[in-house]
Amino acid sequence: MEDYRQMWSELGLDLEAHDGLLAVLPGIYEDTILSQEGRPEGMSYFDFVFSEIHGLRIKELYDHRKAGGKVVGTFCTYVPEELIIAAGGIYVGLCAGACVADEEAEKYLPRNLCALIKSSLGFKLARVCPYIESCDLLVGETTCDGKKKYFEILNELQPIHVMELPQRKEDSDRRLWREEVGSFVSRLEELTGNKIIEEAVRGAVRIVNDKRRALLRLAELRKSDPPVISGRDALLINQIAFYDDPERLTGKVNELCDELDERKASGTGIAGAVRPRILLSGCPMAIPNWKVPAIIETSGAVVAMDEMCTGIRYSRHLVEDAGDMDGMLDAIADRYLKIDCAVFTPNQERLEHIKELVNDYNIDAVVHHSLQFCDPYTIEAFRIEKEIDVPFLSIETDYSQEDVGQLSTRIEALIEMISSPDRA
Ligand code: BJ8
Image (cartoon, rainbow, N blue to C red; front, side, top):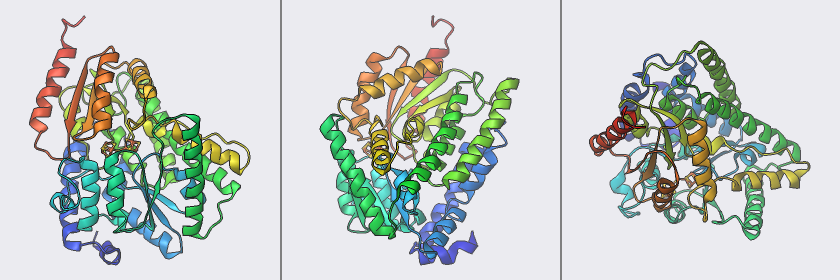
């Protein structure tokens, strides 16, 4: 990692604080990911990418910028990455999954705000995230209130373009969102100096569709019983999909899926528990937040699917190749408005999707993950519990390790209950 110090320094990182962060990450990774036995060989690529999380990928962004290219960072799956690629830029997801400089963040934000937002500001204030420091433009969105107000604060530290996301899906909302997509095109053209042309959009749509198809292929393979990949490994791949080079990642996910096809054909499952099968649903889990899946998978169950933005909610819908430039932008706007985040009202699509996943993935129980103080997901959890036919556990947590004991007890009780032979 020493080779990168000059680059980190040029990016303005606080090298001492950054050293502290890098000192703890390998241990967490070892304990949570590498400690699993019998992992597919194809996971070695993702292990490598993680080991270089602040190294090689940042160097790629750095070289791209030195050559005159731009890097655009986002905080939400509603921001159309196709347009960033079509403008010649590199897209990176910036959501943060660890407690960093909470006390500093709480000088600007209330204590009772979700960990994802506080962590994001903490990383920025502590100057320990080379991704955000590599960005020429940040893109926010009007999803939940916490994010909206956070972006006002962030804008004082780094330029941010905020897309206005409607909260309903009526015709007027669709028109508003389509206009927002058009304004985003103009903002990207201004940033990069490149005119976004039809062929570039078509090429970018192909790149991102291919990435999503590969992730969907992986998702499909998770229907296997016994499972051919753990929930933790699948989550890691989905997390890496937000910052790795999209074409390279697509190739590596497909290579891994070839191996998983063979595992499936030979009946080779993962080394850990193969049942009960859990659907993990709710708020996204940004790197290195593997707390809940790790508890589930070390308590005698497997996470068979994730209904989260760091899971199938990200890859579920593709953009149609729809004619001319206007048609392509319409198709992009339509695709993104299909996302069923809990900030929408009503949000029946999410409930229906969860029911479908329970059925298709032969799910024994749903664990609903809300980050503490996240109203949209915490509130939707009540309705989901009422309307699904399998046992349901709603947890509210954050990025600290303080509740691991209590969460383990509740998850173990759930697993024991659904594994009981008395359960008809
Ligand atoms: S599309 S899930 S990435 S908004 S957890 S910050 S909602 S208070 S992350 Fe999300 Fe986009 Fe929706 Fe996905 Fe607010 Fe809740 Fe925090 Fe959240």
